[in-house]
Length: 595
Image (cartoon, rainbow, N blue to C red; front, side, top):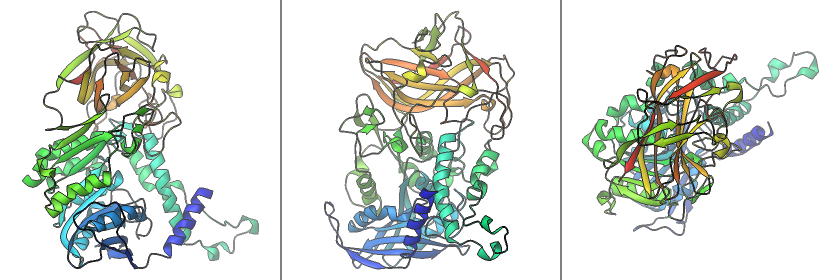
């Protein structure tokens, strides 16, 4: 409560500055541009949406005659955070507008994720384009939910939107945001909702209580100084997410994947290995190349993948437990401005002559440009799951081989939801777990009996894996529903087990995320677990490792194995889960090997 009241106090002080104020400031030092300008700042500028709700923005623009292109960011995280970038961009000859989205900080209305972003985004773009110092070209930028505000505006097709530059954001707010292949993204959903609710609560506090209504309350000592609203009222969207575990019309109305043809502008997609939305970032690039609504949009797709995202910054060479070297850090603001210099100002800075894809290759720890994604030269290679003795834990007999199995006994383990396999590092948001975030040593998990481990011999020469990765499994369970998880690991000569990428499949969604179907205990099912993608060079002496289990908690919710509604269920049972790998059921890890 102390944290909430402190946030409310800060917010109250900010209320005093919501009036419009013009402030001339000098150009920040260290800028590189042909023309630099002094900057005028207008704070708390109101703009009325089509339904009468007023949103407020801070505007940074050159203190000069003429008209300039607009960079717009629409955020639920407080527009004042854009101040540094606003000064920098305006000094470079842009009008930068940072707006609080509906129901957040200085803007009026009620906050509900995704719901109003298309209409409010459209209205704000068109308002920005008509400002007296705007030349009518509007580009958007920002990451995570701020990337969602860009895509949701783009599908509304505002006439003056010229491009978007979303960083680490998703393509679908059901799969790859709130759920992943049927499993609830528990850590993200609960931590993000908690953070969002703080501002919602502070707004409720500022709106005042009801002393008149309480004045007749007896006994007197029961007077509620502060009557906090219920969690359901603070975040009704959270309960809606749980009420819609299937991919239904609730999600389809604002899924970007359902509306790619409506996107008519170039998109510069940025993302990161170890980011929680990496799958959607890559999917947006791949599908927009073919499905965007104009030729300019289809040909204007660009992609940049670094290391970190929600798992760390782009200005630090160390992410999680791994130092990726001095080449990793880059200036995100400068990368964005350089792209918009080319797109909105027609500055010949070489962007048009660069390859459309740029990725950071881990292991080798270097940047590389590519003609496309996925890499056409990468060869899909099957590493078959093999074992001569039970593969449970690090001391087991699980191996990975490019040679298909003959007759082998399956591996099995008991998954107990009451003792779920814990999350160690990996793609997390919005707070780190005590076990870390991003790349962390997986050996504590690999020692468990409910994790089956398959490792290759040490590589004699450098071997690159770059592209989409999947796990082709033949499985059965004693339960009517359970989960299967997969994790790709790079084992260093020291034994350090660096997680690269991971995935999960809730068995009831093996055929469709729209129509779940419970399993028949004991039946063998052929399933595919999407491990998303990575780019990593396994150096000489390193080993390739695969972990298979049935939980990754609390990143994902625990499957209770009962088949009942996961959101309301409290009863749980153990499940005996089996992985088959023989001649007729050759389970395999499918990797894109780059020659």
